[in-house]
Image (cartoon, rainbow, N blue to C red; front, side, top):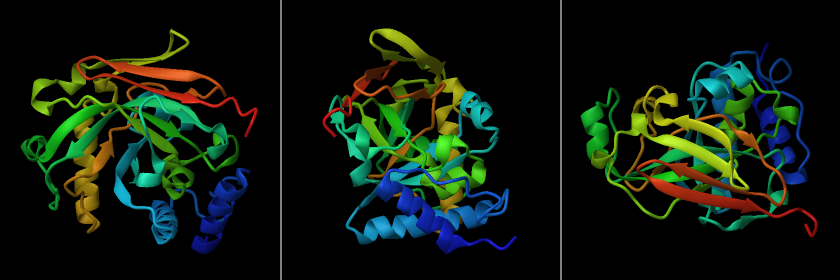
Length: 265
C-alpha cells in the first residue's frame, strides 16, 4: 500500500490536541513494517514542534527491554526526539491531562560532553563522549487507542514519547558498571517494576551505541549536551491519577515523579 504520510501526521497531531487517541496507523495509512515511512511521519511532527519554538535537547531509545518488546510484539529498538517541552523537574507534579494514556518506566540518562558524528562508534568512543549519567523516569504515552501498537505505530508516534524526569545527582560513567545496576520502581512504597541495566539490550551502553550509529548514518548525529534516555530497565507501569512513583537505581540514586488526580483539570 502507498503510505499517506500527511494523513498519519494529522491524526497523531489531532490526538495530541484533542486528547482522544486515534486508531492504529498500520494497515490504514502506513503499511505493516514500513518503518521508513513511519520515521518520515515522526520527522513531520518534530518539525512542527520546533516551529512552535520547542528546542531539541536529545533523543530517547525505545523498545530496548525484552519485557516491553514482548508486551507489544515488537522486537527491534526505535528512537524519538526529546524537546525542552517534555522535561519535568525531579518531584514536580505532572498535570494528568497533559497526557492520554501515560505509563512510567525507569531508565538511565546519558548526558553527552562530545559529538558522536561517525558511524561504527566504539565503546571507548562512547565512554569518552559521555559527561555523566543520571537516573531517569520516562513518562511514555501513546496517541494510538489502547496502546494497540506495532513498530510502525510507535515510530510514527515519536517512539511513544511523553515526558521525562531526570535525577539531580550526576555520576561518572567510569565509576559504574551499568549492566549490574539494579532498578526498583515504587508506588506508595511498594515495588511495581524491577529490573537491571542488563535488561536494556544487555547493557545500556549497547543502546547508546545503536542510537549513535543509527543517527550518524542518517546525517543527524548526537551532539554535545544531548540527553539520551537508554530505554526501559524493566516493565512499564500504567499511571494512576494522583499517584507518585520513585525509581531507585543502584549506583545512580533515585528520581521521583507524581501526577495530579485530574479532579481540577
